[in-house]
Image 1 (cartoon, rainbow, N blue to C red):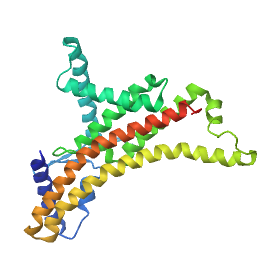
Image 2 (cartoon, helix red, strand yellow; image 1 turned 45 degrees about the horizontal axis):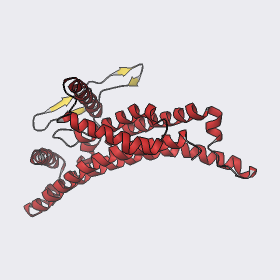
Image 3 (cartoon, rainbow, N blue to C red; image 1 turned 90 degrees about the vertical axis):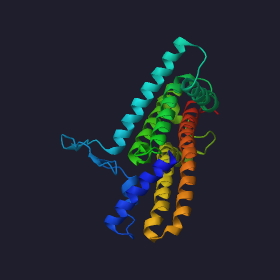
Image 4 (tube, one colour; image 1 turned 180 degrees about the horizontal axis):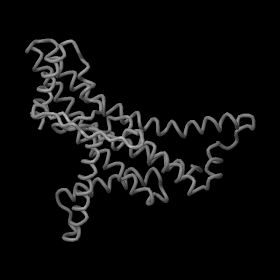
Length: 282
């Protein structure tokens, strides 16, 4: 798979370098950012439909397509896993792998960070974990694209986590009790207005950090890989080929680890923030 990925990216870079000139590096962001086309070089380009509803642009983009693919893959895989337990209680293959991941999220992430009452949040956190993980891996396959490198996607995921955090805290402590619990005990009266503003701002910095962390980490790896391969055409020498390819493959292997880690971190931090909102007494 690595050789195929490298060949496809190299062919694309060569084509762009020839068209735009060796000193133009704008093609890097062209391949990282969202677009209304699926670039299947050298087979061609697929133009995606543009849709406008009541003056609002809701066109289908490359990242939307790969989010749909992630959704379909998860539905098919998880339905298969669910049905496989009807045939045998001993998991095998993809069923065993899925069970390992589910148990890991439940026992190593959700229960330790939320504690009592964590069961009601497990379905959401499992959904977030598997969706981010699938989107991350789809960006590592030939002709793939990483939807989680789009700030709009990560911001939406963070917003949903923000809503779950607030709703979870209010369900456990009540609306008034939840916001009252944001203020630490023993604070002087004259500091209460300031602390209240600080704590309210703190509520919004948490989803902001979730969105930026995932977006930045998933974008950086692809930029580095493209930049390393681009050196071959920018410098116009074959002497840099072994170094560029070697480092690009190393970064690609590192990206596999990053894809796993970022899904874990987003889920873990979301679970931690939920636990802090639900159990304010700790």
